[in-house]
Length: 127
Ligand code: HEM
Image 1 (cartoon, protein in one colour):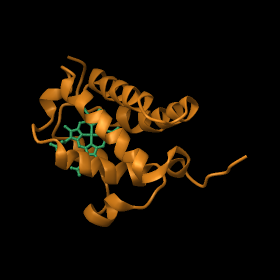
Image 2 (image 1 turned 30 degrees about the vertical axis):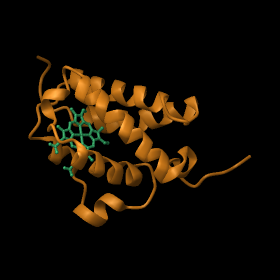
Image 3 (image 1 turned 120 degrees about the vertical axis):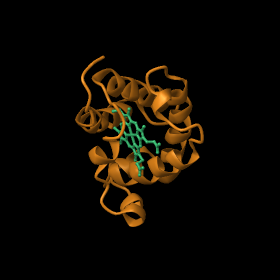
Image 4 (image 1 turned 60 degrees about the vertical axis):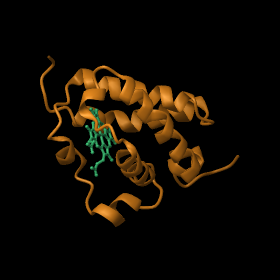
């Protein structure tokens, strides 16, 4: 049995995080609840998400090295995040993960890890 020291390593490291991010944002930009929140030029957001997800899943602390403490809930406060938007974000992520080489049980672990923060970022009542 192979043992991994982090989820980051287990899913395939840097190249797979890039793959997730590349598949995720087109779905976000096509989602009616999410698209209006994001800028047209999505490249800088993708790059930040690559840095953040690497660190969040136990890889190198790329985001903090560049931007300091993540304070992710605070960084999301300018955007009206309803429970529906949190669910939409997670379903885009699940769809992106499903297109990668990550085995299904690990996809579920990733979604479970992201569900906590996604729900925590809700800052606006349902519409
Ligand atoms: C709950 C639903 C979520 C919504 C609706 C949402 C929406 C957004 C929006 C609108 C931005 C700003 C884009 C811009 O720069 O203009 C952003 C940035 C970001 N989001 Fe989310 N997000 C959600 C959940 C998450 C989760 C769960 C994570 C990771 C755990 C995450 C990680 C990030 C990161 C790393 C950034 C870039 C922060 C920075 O500017 O440095 N988001 N998000």
